[in-house]
Length: 125
Image (tube, rainbow, N blue to C red; front, side, top):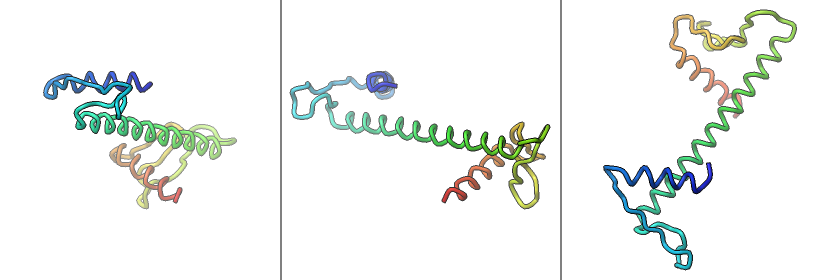
């Protein structure tokens, strides 16, 4: 998303109730060119940009995890047919990752994914 598109979303959001801000940007020749006035609007804009940058970084991290997962599946399934259990996610051997995705064995699927994510983060330290 371009800066102009992001700015348009920001202004559209904050021009609606309950904010109803009227946006004023300083001129290109001012001491603070293209910044919002009053200052709280500029702070909100910078926070909005940071939130999108943070979100983009998280999406990139998830993409890398997915790539790593695919390579693990491919490596562990060379010469195998059908489901292959990649790893047990806890000592009770409930919940595992397979070539078909997550098997819950009665557990909450999101909880199993969180366990797997935590293990991957620990491994990368």
